[in-house]
Length: 218
Image 1 (tube, rainbow, N blue to C red):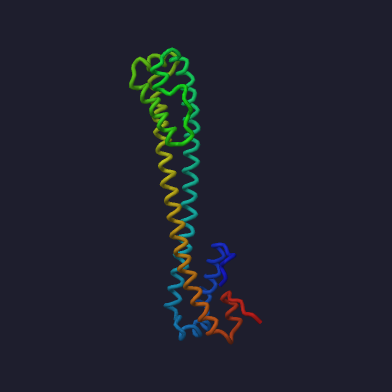
Image 2: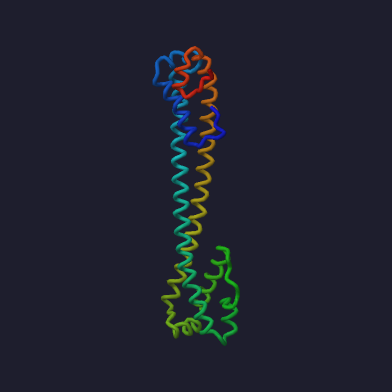
């Protein structure tokens, strides 16, 4: 079976033809049994096929969960960053003449583009304000209460959690891909060996070889 241009689905289909049709046809079974492929041996191939199919489904599911986690993370970060930037603008007005606040809260610095840098900036911003009664009072004048600030800090924490979830789901998806690939490789190796034997055992029965998906050259 030449798998070079096959999709994984095609590989499983072709492996299924060879294994399931061998088990389901007594003529094929009678021919390959004396050559080392009795029903028990073919059932080993069937088990590999079933395990491979399950791992393919698992890999698809894991990548779906990763994509979902990524979407949640991006949505939460955008919403939280929008509020953060609004708060930065308000703070620039509230602390226009406060050098310490301007420096500590990084009001005039660049916003980090990396998630680690962004989390450091936002955490530092809200925590510093919440720990300073004078700064909280100054922002309350502009409607930014301690309750609002705490809620924004909680939103930042949620983004951090969502970021960790993305990393976890990405790792799970990568592991699922590796497990899938290893099992399919094991299956294809089994099928390759079986195909050699089947071609010999059924050399005088080309119609049965074709039933197994094995092309018989004229």
